[in-house]
Length: 173
Image 1: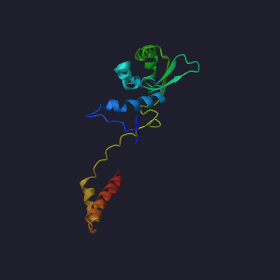
Image 2: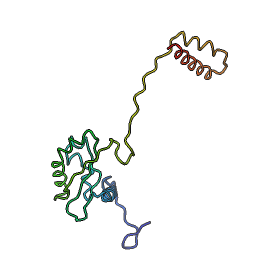
Image 3: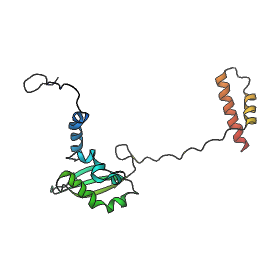
Image 4: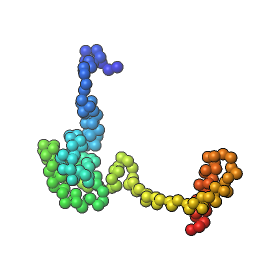
């Protein structure tokens, strides 16, 4: 248990606390590790750059050069949206600097990747949707039922009927 400056346990507040108050310290620490001195850039990205720009990109990192004059904001987007962002670099930089209150960002770097981003791993390529399989014809189902009629277990018999109907329908093609 942690103690306060007087050696006693810190006094807990009465009533409810805002979730933002509970998380603000942790959000600030994580943001500072990524170079975001003002976490508002992360939490209010859509308000800062506008909903249309926020829909196609998100901030990833702020890196500072050796000289310390101006930082580079890295923005994550998909390859198809990169040319659109390239044309809007100056407006995005101005809006982010307005959030900081001074010219903190001197460059904007666009990183292209899949919508999943860096934290989730490599680009996610979804497989093609499976084509719905046609139902076997009723006469094929009947033949499969006759072939598996001697099986006593109901669930095994139904499984064998389905398998038989699938095999017979493929032979027909």
